[in-house]
Length: 289
Image (cartoon, rainbow, N blue to C red; front, side, top):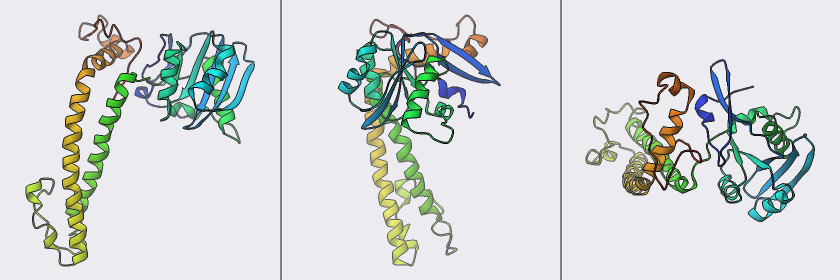
């Protein structure tokens, strides 16, 4: 089975629970091992979900397709509400379900997408099989966990993630502009067009009007991207600042609790713990950008 890197399995869950550390050939995974009366595995999509609920003895109590909506979820799990734990795959659709489970005080386990390699179905793999195997792995204490990022910080994290995307697009445009001269063996531009002051006259170096237009389009997009990036960075700074204390509390304390940190600093003397009345501790959050 293909295993994810240790960083892929950073601790994260909405309900406080025990974690079993499994070390195999240097690979570290954190699995949710709390016993429950009922185990729910959900193969979640944008508009639909396949729900499987197992009893503590492994009996299948519910296994059917549902609409991906809060009311549909509440109706499905209502008979098994007491002693229930829910597990889903870490895809792009889990925010609403994590928040719903938190509001209903239902333990929620988010499984990293790479751990889904364990959900092979032999000759078949589909929602029915995946939902059952998620519940079965959860019941057996073999469900590796991913981060359940704090709801208040998700929008900021998603905003920050747009910057690398824009930077990659800008780099592609800069590279294309710098290397367009190579096919015709024209002299190197000789200046860095990443700076606005160096872009004047670059398109006119080419004789073909179509190539001139191509370079002009590249430079116009770079100039526009520069303005977008400046606005995004300013907005990100303003949005992220209120969350810095919470992020440090979650991230630093989570790091201090890792086996590697404990081995190198057993007394925790080099780890800064930040807690406050509003954010008393890291039990409900840990994560990375």
